[in-house]
Length: 496
Ligand code: GLN
Image 1 (cartoon, protein in one colour):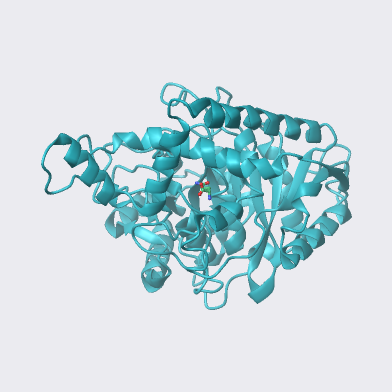
Image 2 (cartoon, rainbow, N blue to C red):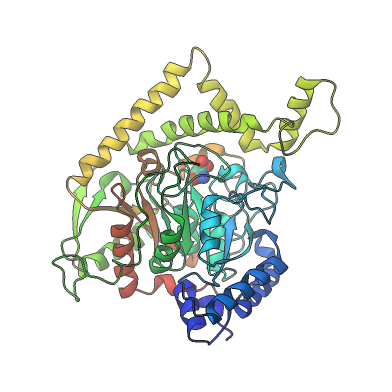
């Protein structure tokens, strides 16, 4: 089969079950494509032999009668998840050449389900960024227009799916890093409720915000991956939710209670926060989002106006809390325990300073300085504590909105993908682009990006759907119903 890379996870598993292809064939196919499209900068590491060995093992399991939605499906992981067999850099020179002695829980669970690991995917350094331009190992390029950013920080992840270099991938989202690159690259991604997926083995950025999730062509494929990734891991991650894993694929095809086949979303109330539809959002993005919402009405949903009055504050609040936690998490990279160490130094303090000055890129250094400042004596109450108080109010605003609706919808980002280098020297311009994703993260709510059309330059636009706590199944169902009625998620960039 020659179009294996367009089948998606479910299509590929079906083709393998029907004997039309094998995991080894599919793995070879993706590896060849990854090599052919190396100029996209999606992968940071690939181990062809290991991937083919895993594929052969999966084929043997299938031949022995085993079935499985992920058995033999070739995936790749954001290089923020530690992997025993492959290097882990987190996009940083600080971890260049680092090899972990263990697998992240999410990686281990997908492997247990029989998925094949093709390699590790490019990302912004320590997941700090929204364009993948902060990677120490070069940019990743948007397959819809290689002069544009793919979004970030899970940029390589989004590129790999959009360009057909992996059937699906993992990403992480601290303030939008699954949803925004998914939107920029025209794929589907979900950030679950905080605590749904174990953070064990995820290189930590901001621990109270970091969450793993799948990125794939469709909501149905995301459901397959999330079912394997999620679930309690409390012995290893104390913030992991102690709730049984769910089968997120089950509710997909079913109409909501009381709905009909023609109107599968009858009864679903979609809240539109007025703050998400204002002047700050580009007209082409708004037009695609509004057209998607009209489609939702046809599917039986009703649109209601809601308000998230502290949306604007989510940027300053996030850019205090995330750097504060990052400055603490990144203190472990001292040249002693692991990672890079300066070659020449005078004494211990000089070794620390040189190691960290060499190992961390400019954005990471900026955040360490901001974080250290807002946590310092005398400023802690004015900045960090105040930000935590507003964070609580942001979460309360969502609960007030959810009193009127089941799901909240709006744009993912205020524009389509920008040109490489366009915001390069201006950190604040980058931070402002996170306006629609940060509040969800601060509240710990699940959110997703669903392909919803195209804007200027033929670039993809994502619709953001946000659910209440633990409502991943409802979100995926709402996205799936939309994808049954539209074909945006099936569009492939030219030449791929
Ligand atoms: N763009 C945001 C940041 O730079 C979000 C990153 C993320 O979610 N990892 O912090």
